[in-house]
Image 1 (cartoon, rainbow, N blue to C red):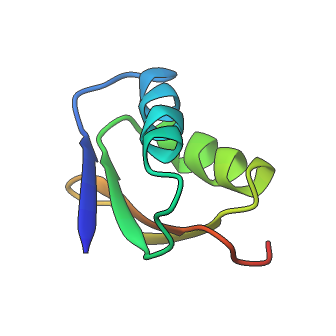
Image 2: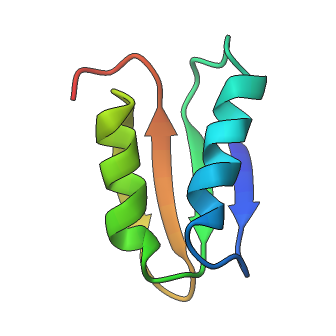
Length: 75
């Protein structure tokens, strides 16, 4: 599974980097992991994913926060 490591970045940079990753990989349909260290991402990443109609599932919150994200899911 592909992993997008955004640890060490403060908001809003994880959202900006995630948006850039999605635009650079328009055909990606497989789930991928987004790893962040900023606790603000616990709200920001799911909100962004809902807005973009992406499936977003929190996988872990310690030591870093990990979300599994996938395109094309009904939100």
